[in-house]
Length: 236
Image (tube, rainbow, N blue to C red; front, side, top):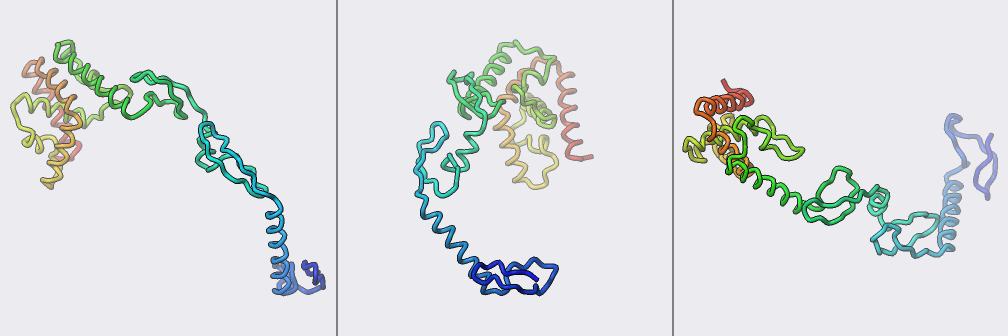
């Protein structure tokens, strides 16, 4: 035998299923108890006045109202996550401004400074290539950016495009050499245009390097690059 959990009822009853946990003798008692509990919560919430607070994140001037037993100190969860991150103080090597970032490996303060520094590095390499300061026997080290090595297939396409340009081949005629595995002509042309636009400066540097080599060495480098491209595209 059990006793009903409703304070107004409190009469003993026998549960319909002994394996299930039953607190009330009937559905009316359960609904009456739930209404009483909800009324107590509403009255407790009304008694407590909302507290107007300022967001605790530095630099955020948003005010918000904290109600009930809540203990939040940030206006939004996004502000809370940002405030709990550890900030690293760094100096941008391009514009020399001090900035804070939660990422330990971040170098530049903005994407604009990052693109400007990458363009400056490419211009320095191109200037060195035109002045003849690049050693002809070192093919790939001067073409790689800091911390971002070029993929093998991309480097092979750069070498082959530079050699084809030395031979006097037009850009449109390079599509069958650089992308032999493409069956659709439009996709082949689009991929060629994107590649030539993205790797324009590297192709110029590679062309300067290959021009300083002998014909035998230049043809050997071009043959290796062509063979690598065909092996990756699984062509006979």
